[in-house]
Image (cartoon, rainbow, N blue to C red; front, side, top):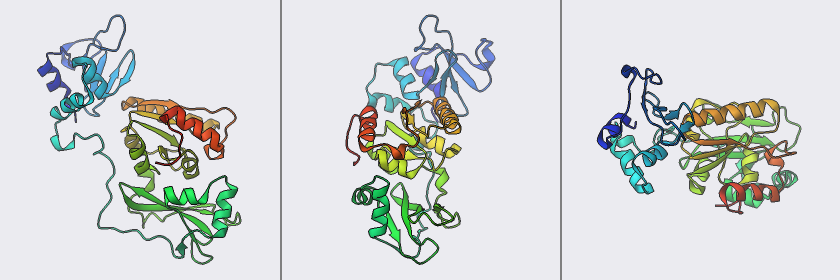
Length: 311
């Protein structure tokens, strides 16, 4: 964790602690004048000593990198990282991507019985949903199943995290099975899929600074690399922490009341952890997976400044 007090002492930045009697100082926080506020800055910028994040009582949450630059800069990115690393209480743990779920390297996951390359029926289903089967296979490595087994007549969607197969999901292609969506059994998962997000590895390669968060896997496919899915509108604390590693997070859930409510909660949680976070609403959209290719392309241009759905 970043040692803000040691940082302040070395750079001669005046700060106040809970015992100082300053009106805005409270237990668990240390305060400095906010360099982002206009007018009277006061000692409004607080650093939470337990959770390791900044928040100004007047102008909101701030990223640690931005605070370092504002207090002692201007600095380039390497200069900021050097300071951030130097004032770590755990020198080996400074790298921002370290505090994320870890998979047991000794475990190996097997895909369901009957899993094979996509056949005609699988491809027809994907085309009917507006996807190019070859493109989805190329980017996301999906497969299909035969007519036998517990996952018969389904598309199999591997879930990778940090380069390892940790779980999988499946989708019925017949429209007749009781469960349209069927996940890997929890006992077989290398990592609980609700502790991570689908598409994480692609998102890192695409842009460590920005990510688009959607509900489902098909939503990710439509937008392309740089989008990740939370496997539904309920977002776990582990998923929030993982998403907070991105500087900017754009939340695009379905346009229905509960989904929008959860999207706003995710935005607020991420703002508290220091990520600039926004809820996106696209007029007349019910589900990101139903966007046209042109609409998805425009969204990528708006967020990432690129057109292609591929890396």
